[in-house]
Every structure is written in C-alpha cells, then in structure tokens.
Length: 103
Image 1: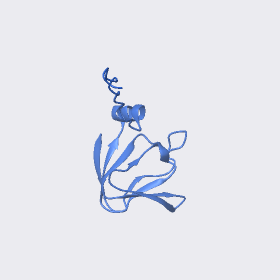
Image 2: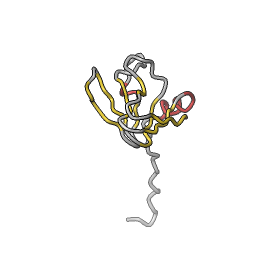
Image 3: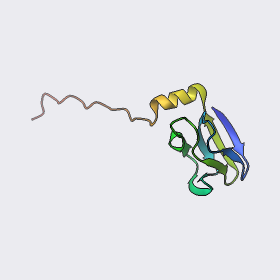
Image 4: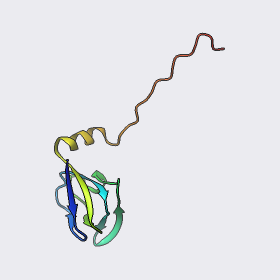
C-alpha cells in the first residue's frame, strides 16, 4: 500500500499501460477519459479497479487528478488479497436453533 498525492491535472495513468494496481481515492477526485471524452469522475471512497482494465490487464482509459488528490495505491501482496476477496462478502451469521419451547 502506498499513499500518493497528485496535483491538479497530473496523470495517474494512460490507456494501454499495464495496470499493476488498483487505486483508492482518499481525497479530491480523478477524472477518467476514454478516447478523449470524460466518462466518469471518482471521488473519496471510490476505487479505480479491474473494471477499467482489459483482459490483458491494461488500463482501457486515462485518469487525471481533477483537483489536488490523495490516493492509496494497492499493489503486490495487498492487491493479491483484494483480488482474491473482492468484492467484500458480508459474513453470514447463522440463525439460532429453534427453541424446544417454541410452538
């Protein structure tokens, strides 16, 4: 995990580059463009992930900080953990057994 600060208009990544991470926006915002057209803006709590990557693991878009932005880069062992458990699944709490005195 690595925190990174981007200045306004600074590039996070470009299309067709190999994605070795997912990126969690902590503060600020990231504008995503495909073919030069804005398609989505990511804000605090949102994650740029595999949904923005092709089958070969390359970004299908470009991302730029649309204001001063802090992100958390998740890669390596932390990324492997996310890839094996993402999206998070709520734990199932078993129901208590029926009481013998219940009708």
